[in-house]
Length: 119
Image (cartoon, rainbow, N blue to C red; front, side):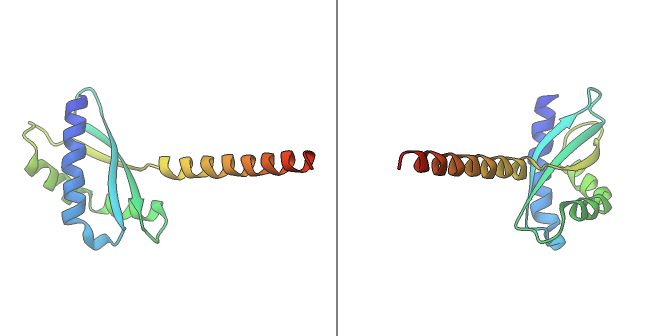
């Protein structure tokens, strides 16, 4: 299952780069693919870099193109069935950035507090 997921991830990255450049979504990256045990459904997690539109709108536009994406994927796979695709926005990078900002604020506040007590 994991090998199939990695293969689909690799192939979808290629499809997204070549065939969906007209979406003007910036850099589209497939961050993770999770397959169901019967290999008929793939949950595809996507991240965007350099986009100006909300992620939900971009996912909606990608879902509109899902039949074409699935067709292009099927041409590249050697599986008996091309899995159905469900796209999700992967907000891991945004979440990590938010946590990093919070940690920096705590550190800055801590530095200021310690700085004032030592004077």
